[in-house]
Amino acid sequence: MHVLEKILSSATGRLRAAGLESARLEARLLLAHAMGIAQEDLIAGRTLDAGATKRFEAMLARREKREPLAYILGKREFWSLDFAVGPGVLIPRPESETLIEAALGDFPDSAAPLRVLDIGTGSGCLLIAFLKERPQATGVGVDISPEALTWAERNLRAHGLPNRASLIEGSADSAEGQFDVVLCNPPYVADSAFESLEPEIVHYEPAIALKAGNDGLDAYRQLGPLLLNKLRPGGRTYVELAQGQATDVTKIFEACGLSVVRVADDLAKVPRCVVAGFPAEPRKKTLESGLTSG
Image 1 (cartoon, rainbow, N blue to C red):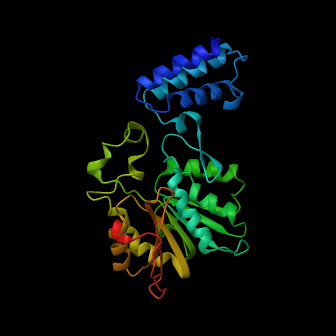
Image 2: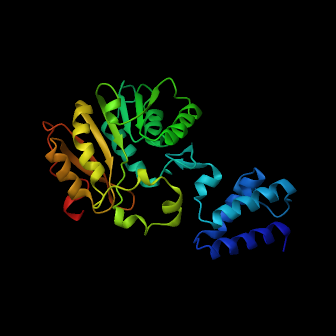
């Protein structure tokens, strides 16, 4: 067995013992990152120098402690774009792409000068993904966490968007004016369920971006009035949900005066995104996913 394969085999065993299902894949990703090469370039003929060996061991030890892989690699892909992430910011999830897909479908004109607000912007992934698809749009990202905004600012620069977007530390009220598109991935984990989540989430990701009271709905109760005030006539808001929350969130938003237009499913057919507008906007008779299943 070649030395590189021996190293990978040993690392895979260590990660598997730490409870990781994708141990082999993660070992390859970490080793490639330590060597400064792409994963597909990990071939038997390559050698591992002392510096790469030291880096790999350090990263492997961090992953054994269940630190998120994205934090160790320093990035996570979202909407086919790379986003820098690390301690203090929520890691982008694939299911959040549902919000982008829904918003782009509702605003198909790539030349429209849309104004976009991202509430709780975190890494900036939602705001940046939308702006990359709509080159005439401008945006504002707000977050109460200065640590998260550091990552968002870094990502705005990396994607060439500082001139089209601004970041504000504070609540949605801190953003002046009204918007055509409002995006939000709020905290939605019930406090009682938080400790049962994966160690990567419980011990490393910011709890402030995840925990949302006894029933996981506190953030939606706060959002309702804010969304109504921040939407322009004809504007729409796209808010992420956890599984099983569609009916409750719809009731909360409609009680605040919003009109829920539909609920969009993610790729796993889970109701993932509430789409809402002004009360005058007619609600679709057939929702993208039945609210009664929430």
